[in-house]
Image 1: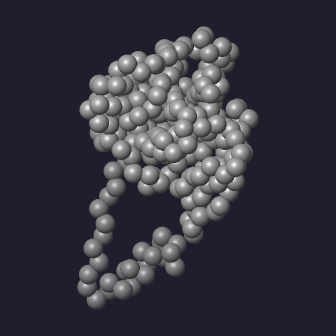
Image 2 (image 1 turned 90 degrees about the vertical axis):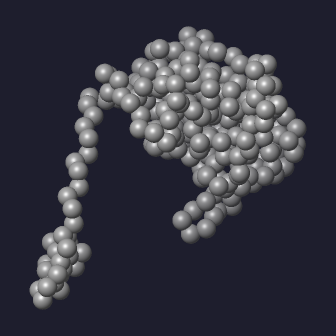
Image 3 (image 1 turned 60 degrees about the vertical axis):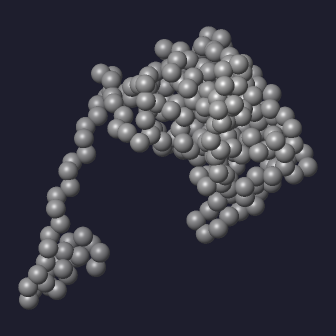
Length: 252
């Protein structure tokens, strides 16, 4: 089984991202890393291939520094990488991102495409489903467990009340929830081996994507208003005051 995993390079997941003069994230910061949410899917891909054979390809789109996300995947055990980097993609919205990744993924041999549920810098959660539509494959989101099942897959999809059991034909696209796997740490041997694994670097022109112009732009960014301190209610009229506050909030 050949699996393609999407690996996004994000600004420091534990820090405060900086914005450029165009109101967009500065993605070429030196403290960026592979999105932690993508490691669960990468681990699942490695387990599937280790059990049934095949190869794992890591695909990323971003600035040149996004190579770090690809290298992390290779160090964990992936076999090859693809990096799409092009200055024209700065500010790409979900649709443009899906178009570019669809073109990149289509160049790989894959029975399964794996992505995180949502990125830690965008949180739209809509890109994987858009990508599946462009690839013309079935999509199963929020997967907590996946197993090969004949010519397809059997998936357990996490829900608020438990999980659904679904089947999907090959090829398919899934998003993997946090906690579905326990991502491995790259070993020293894996880190050294990653340096010699093949990585293909592509531009928009290389992929033949005709429309990479975003339809959304960021007009401005403002800080959220600071929240005022709460009111401490004491005294004989406390109960009445609390009731009035709840009534004003339309709770009662």
